[in-house]
Length: 319
Image (cartoon, rainbow, N blue to C red; front, side, top):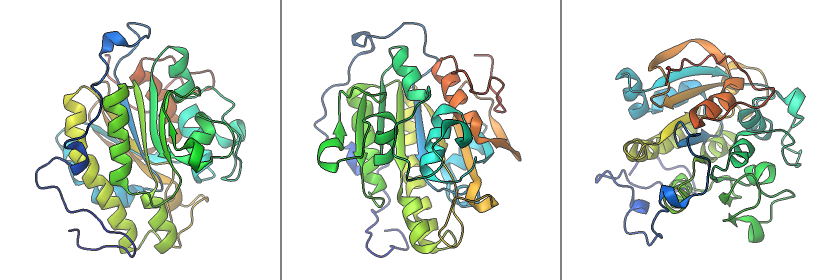
């Protein structure tokens, strides 16, 4: 077992076999073959997974991302230090992450604004090009990009064959939803629907940060646990040809608060594992969070939407 179990949580043992238990013996339907999917040909640079770790600070994330840091040291990925936009809150930064726009433009200025996105975003841009999108994510992602209106747990948890910008979604509504379950949801979506863009959105770090503060053992343990689980899956994703981006929406301070401009509330990590990214550790200077949406578009082979940054601070190859 992990050395510390936060109250009310039972963390799983480290998987000595290298295969997380949710990957073994699942009665999933066979994955769809690429030729069975109706989409434009020659558009995609690569299928992409975005892992969004809600409230993961740069420093705590770095300290607990052993395997990801190993890949950076081995020049098998790129790492950046990101200065998040303001307010450093979840719903505004979801919209910033996927539209590439600041909150003063996209209008989601706080967590209590429940309307759907009104601007082109990574999900809608994929849909316009006939690409398949999927998400295992918190309910607010559903409200923004999948099914307008307040989330109804009895109706909206499973949105397979959805009509919104997210084609296939499994959405949770409790902040402490276990990351092992979340990643299992994501693996189901990935294997069953073979999406071109898959979002995996964890809330556990945010939950323990609010409960205990970002200087607490519980917060650090939540970061360590999800990083361990990502390390179990990342080699499999890469072997199957997926590009992977790992980042956060905002940070957290020692009082369990975020929303403001301090470093601990807005400085977050960005890891990129793709042949399209120049490998290396580029963290001496901070880059803007506004790079994320156009970066995802580039990785997916999509033209960025009007208003997104045209010149990226992320170093890309000539692929």
